[in-house]
Length: 590
Image 1 (cartoon, rainbow, N blue to C red):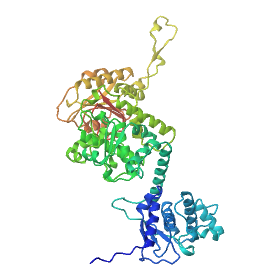
Image 2: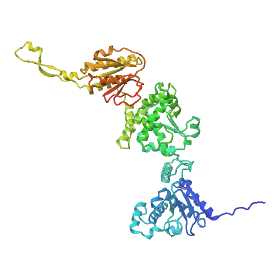
Image 3: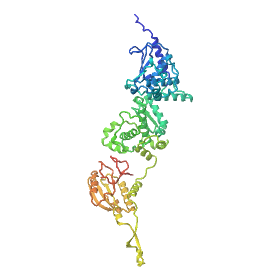
Image 4: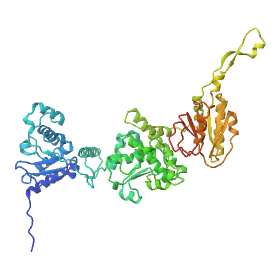
């Protein structure tokens, strides 16, 4: 026995056909796909009513209304425009003037979009000032012209939109920002129209995803990273990135590719953050700066630095689970690496491996354009354009690192000489009759003064040297550092230097002639380095001026030093870094 067949419902079929007409429009299709329509008897509707919409994307139609699909398409599009233009506001709920102003603006949009056909009662002449809701709302408060109340999809000019809170987060689409969705659909429709006019044929109905839109934003709107983005191919094929084991994104400089996994289901704003993260890995030459460090831990250190910068720049939205620690703000990647190395097992588990390091010898090949030089040039041009046109805030650390990459590093001994110049100005000789010139003996009747330095000025020209003598420092670097200090001291009339040797305990050497420093170093106990007792020894010494600067030569600083506000500088071998941000300069010996 055959079951009873359900009778067709012409009214519902016409309504569904109207939905189909709206979905054919590229501007409103994304909104139609997110909205939820109702065509039943579960809600009260007057006989003359058409349709109304709630702020959570629920659209309720009059199931007893008989209309053509074109008319249904028109009123459905009217409701979608209320969502797209942000008309449904909690502070304006129940205000008939606001509803009338919004209805007029929707009618103006529909006249331009040419979607469906307006029903007879809504086919009214458009007012001349129906372009902007707020200005029309203020005008209606003063005039309250009844001609503006004939565009509501509810009978009697009643409100056709209702506030019911925000739409809950969807497991598939995430949170819905109707205005942002409308802006993106307008942009995609405009791009498709331009491509069509230019002879570019795209697949019908093909939609640009959030990853591609984020990439195009860098190319068109963010010059700092636009040049870098243009040189890397974006690979967002799901099968390819899953085969490579990439959960979110990664960069390969030697392949000139950025990999992004669409399965991460990030928003466009989050993809902007992620892509900017990968572009900065390439632009700041993090792979080249790896050296002999552990690749996984170096990746983590670089991630902490970049994420802090992007957060300060308000670049997109930071996705959940990224590496970020406010306590590391201001530290370089090298400094963070040294901190993380103390807990190697913990931080290795945190690594995302988003830097795909090339083969060990790929940088030694000459069969390619120097990618590091290209990246440095691209980020430098982007920085110049960004600053020249005032395109937004950039962290000082990022600007400093970009500037440092664009020019060869200044040798440490040159920077040390500048440090001496700033602290020890050249002495001036003065004429004095207290000690006669040697020419006086030839003409005893003519007094001749001599040119002398003031003894008081010479007495205050000194500095302290705190020297790590535990034996862990390379002898050639130590000799170069001490030789430079001795020569610069003599050139600037600094004759006496207060020296303290440190390993496991401090050894006060007292004042020494500057020229004798280079040949007086003796390795002591080889039992580790503790520098704080040496600093305290100098601070408490009654014969060491409080204003005298301090030079600290070491390759291992285990604890944060209390330098009592004294002017200071560090001399550290290249590849080493301090586990805390020093207030004084750091000269890397090499």
